[in-house]
Image 1: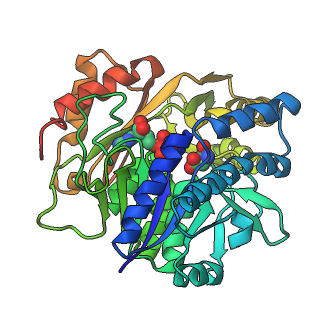
Image 2: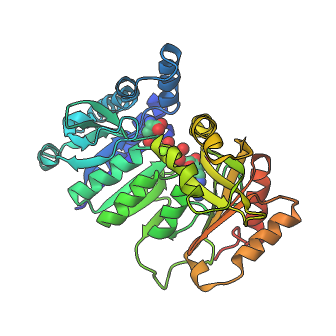
Length: 411
Ligand code: ADP
Ligand code: ASP
Ligand code: MG
């Protein structure tokens, strides 16, 4: 007998029929003698609908009230799934985040989980009841409803698995595992049998939304056995992708595991600033004070004592960042101009094998040059190389790299 946490995403609970399918899957696991905690997302499209609704009423929604609205999506699906289970004669109880008591900090719309009370869930499980928990939400110490950021139900699933010391956390979605890249962009993408935790962390942080990055962080911190599977396949049909913690000799030993991309960033360049100590701080200090996160940063070699300084921010914060620079920075450091481009994309190649293989970067750059794609920015770490390019070449770049690195071929 195992304790399993299963998380079902939006499309997996997208209709009454799909919800009944989830109940049928749960029933099969129960007959095998397992204990189950099930986390569900809102019906696909619902969180977007609620967000749009909020913005119609208040263009910049109050964060506390926005969370009150957004959290309703998951409350619907926990109730519906319990009904589907009860209808099959299975004992089940639903809990929203506050009822479990998933305690978070108070950072509305991007709250972090601090603590999970497990007693209630344990009592239900001991009584043979399936516990159904709303993903994506929690409650802060003052009793305010919070949400965990888009894709946050993954994190609820993994955090519950960590708190309950579950044997496995299964993330059911609309693809049958983690692929070499998003299969919607590259049909030749291949499912990975396993991917290391480090690679998954990079892929998630670089834009592969199959798992929310915080869920991967949780899995790493608490060594949760994590698997991504399809809810559209019958149980036992596919093994999905296992996130592993050790290099295993049996594992695929590709140099590159995957390609991630992200269209959520914008580039800003501060033109012709004096090339002297303190300039990076003079530019990025006010950006940080305005709570704007910066990703890539580039400062060019100085010419005649002057240089250009570029960085990227989230597209949602692009205008805010430009305003800060124009109001607080431009005159102060006597920059000649502030330029921006929100239509960029970041394409990244990820693989632990890069540590021991040279020449990956040059092959990547050659591939892009052969396609006539200009690289605007580059950043590297031990296990990834990222480039910023014009957004309109994103699909071309990802496909060309996927082919050049033979990711469609079995490792
Ligand atoms: P859910 O609603 O189940 O949480 P998401 O839409 O959040 O599902 O995540 C699944 C989607 O992630 C897939 O449909 C796929 O388009 C996308 N995706 C991006 N990168 C990858 C990848 N490397 N492997 C698999 N899926 C990916
Ligand atoms: N419903 C939330 C969202 O759409 C959380 C999730 O699906 O994981 O972002
Ligand atoms: Mg998701």
